[in-house]
Length: 417
Ligand code: ASP
Ligand code: MG
Image (tube, rainbow, N blue to C red; front, side):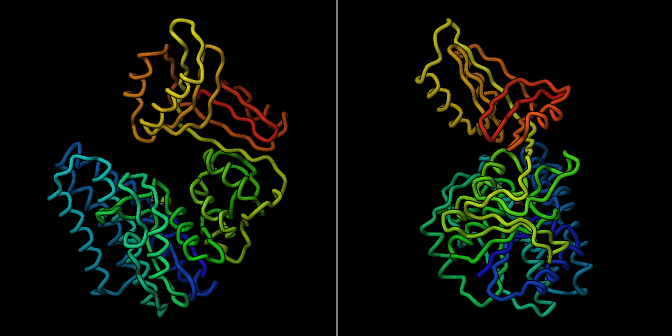
């Protein structure tokens, strides 16, 4: 069994959907499970629906319509008039509207997941129907029936035992299966999601549970590059990298792979390929166990919109293990992701990501015990295998707020002008 993951960019319009069929024709379509994200920027568009629902309910209908029209435009190019897919798509958006009309829960994260899943539900119905139209027999699977999680909406944790059983019972070899990335469900069958950009992780979950031969993530770039081409000039394709290298790069913000993806793969040593859906015959990047980075070049990862918090004791007392453990407990409670930290006798600095909009209550708690300073909108720059010369060129004229270094990695928190 092989697992393919196609992200939003690979289903963003009618031509892209046609291209999926082309990729499958070139690579074979038996013994394969394909995981698909919402089309283009649909997830953001659905976030607008959720925003409207909570903040300005007069806009709910319009925001839903915008999203529906985008899909209708695509399917009217792909399918003949009167094809059953039109009814399917209308029904899905009707269900979404009905949910919001009937919903009584004030829980933002819960509502978010019940709404946001329609992006993936719609895209997979469209791709599955399009493949069938083109005589590529396939089975549409509701990933929510297989991937079970806790009820931690928007960032749910997988129940591996149940998930593995469900997947192995349902997905039999031989066929072609089409399913959604990102979505899952909790014990009461309400929809949960695995975190933004979580479809890669879904690919890894299926690959792990199916003992797949490999997982391929299809992208609009040639593979994993040594820097984001939107930020750096003259980027190079990394042909071969180790799980370790990939996991470090993903964790610090290389958006090409979702950070959670590598762990299940490396546990079973399932190779990961990152390839271009535009040139599927090219080898792309191969990620596996203990591989020497090839080519051996410096890799740069930029993560914007971080927050640097610096704490110092009010009364000049030391910041000790006990304080640090209290601080981390708060970071955990407010779901802050820590990307760098440093301490001295009477101060502690931590760079965090405010994914869940919880900065205010966190600061309030911290102020009760510490003198607190913070900078919002800072950038975390992580450089791997970079020479001092390369670093100097990169940092030229930029204001460094914090620096940390070991033999392989140098990290900087930079102030944006
Ligand atoms: N559609 C979801 C998102 O945009 C999941 C994904 O694309 O991986 O975050
Ligand atoms: Mg995406």
